[in-house]
Length: 292
Length: 336
Image (cartoon, rainbow over the protein chains, first blue to last red):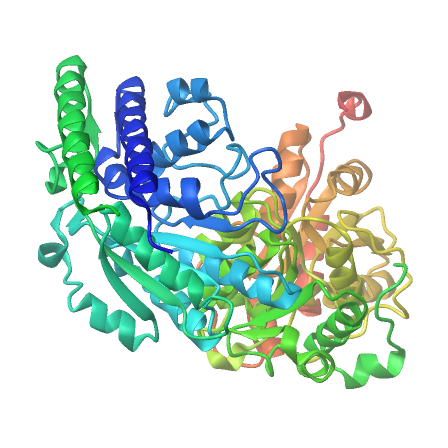
């Protein structure tokens, strides 16, 4: 069902609030993986505020949808999403990255409520997701598994092992997102290690592949709706290849691979906050114009 | 061990150790629909034949992809399934080391790893298929229970124990047949508790896996030929190790020899040495195992003989340590 203008605007507001909270968390922590956190923040927003069938008061509910953040360093955005949702106290964000905190740079599923898998070592999430999706089939459960990887992360061969398993077992109840922000630590992906033609590779691995602007909430929701529509039938899994910008929402760093990990001081915080507001206003204008 | 698969003495001589695993697992899976077998193209080699006959829909083969196998198992475990993964020890410990560490141990999920073709039991396959560093790797990981059964009976007991207890288990078994050590499954197997197979006060040999039978044979020979009383401990659980049994051996025999089909670095010998050193009490100590080099190619018994972890090697080691003298220490008993 297409996103209504009202719902689109509400999700944009939530994404804006979560971007601000992510920036604030980076400020509290002194530094963080803000680039890859912001590129995936629109996905986190729509999953946690539209799609995931979860219970905040029963985080281990066995029939819940699962979300596996394979690019575990995006915890700088994921932790704010989980706290804002109510799984953990927002005050915890003030301890992010600090000694003795339950919230490290990569979230521990045994310490942070609402986290389905402890990630951080790249290339692990897809196999874990294949496991939870296979478990649903074996146990006769209807929950869905969502899993998000980075694009540079696809250099880890284990992802492709998992993709083969997803295709072989026709895990349409597993929806894969690839955060194609085109950046790695050492530079653009195509300079460090070529990924293209990425869509062709995903199709060759058996995915029903959908390409979207991953920083466009409306497009994201359309793609997820299409993936969910086919999830009840045992068929090829869906991969949503999200074209995104590292640092999305902050004009002065968006698309720059140098923003993978950044320190934030008072001046940059003020500057980035202003840019986030400008970006939000532009997004609202787009939603007002294109929404129905 | 109550419940679980029970097999008889005929099985001991006609069923390979891994087949005991397969039969024990088939029994568990018949009773519990939430148990799943996972393998990486080694369903036949790790003897899942019986399981495939009973519930093929609960055998997940991920192809030749050990990393994926561990991740899939972790995901399943998180969803309420008890997965039993089986593969060659060399690959379960090394090819999927990060997944074992992070997905299984760090998350502390209820996954059971059956690591077959342990030590040099696939000796002719060469060093790519020898697993002589896996105990060192796995032992260092938090949360995991590490068991090295000495024969088929003990394998059945270990598999049942893994099923009955929550948490990651790594059970290391040999390819092919093991020498029969016990008369039945009922000898008091308990995770984390060594089994005394031969009484003695002159020296203690602590062994695991295929070296346990060799140690007992050596003890029998030394008693008749040299009049020595050698205690033999089957240290089937490497982690958590039986600290009490080790300290008792230090106090009562003051000479310890460890024997394992594994590198002398990081395995059973190291685990025992850590307990001894931590106790603050010195004793004669010798570790038998593979020296710090890759093992030769050959049949397991030939390799064991060459590196001195068979009965002959153990006999020579006991005679060596029996020549070590100890100074009188009146306060020996007071220091514990």
